[in-house]
Length: 273
Image (cartoon, rainbow, N blue to C red; front, top):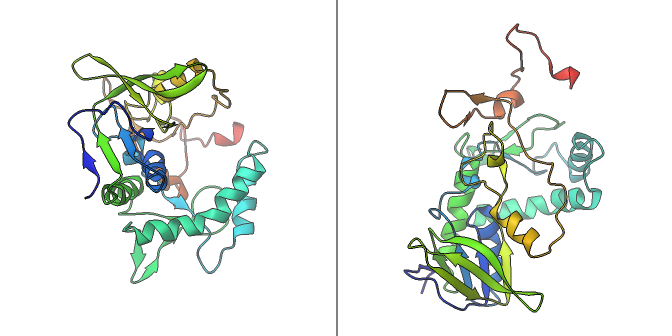
């Protein structure tokens, strides 16, 4: 029996995953081998920051590239702020994770049967994969959700707002949520994975989707978790401004293909910052 969308949230499960973007789905797939997994989303299951990720995904898979060079570029772009061990793990594990996504049905752009790589900002080689041009996040999310739905131990519930972690004797025992009808429920679980994305919506000007409100970060903080690096929030400099409307992201691939940022006097200004 494949994964299913539940009509009501159960009161108990082995694992709760809060969030149904790429992080939540990939975590659920991994946890499915160890027990029952409940994936909860506060909006539609397909509504996450993942769906808005237009840019590609960097990986050292082409014949002209290597992992050491990718690591060097990554650390240089981080300007001394990157965790070297985390960056090393990212670039070393990247090729295997991309192959995994392909095996699960992710359709990256190709020229014939060969993967197509583009070169974008801070990369010294062409190593950025795209899917359907500027729909990379949406395609990866689609493939991961299809994979998760094939696993019988994963269940989904959408439009469920998780208000807090359920604490008992100083330990997380599950989650507390508010149903669409405004009712408070508790779900007990042996472990909770918070995969709720970022908090870009705390800013007036942002290209983050409307659901990026930092719920998971706030829950973790209230539960006593150590929170760090909160100043690192992604801002895209290329967005379509329409008064009264959300900022529409114009793909960062523009700069990767050679576009320049200029001010209203047509002067390039980024060298000053």
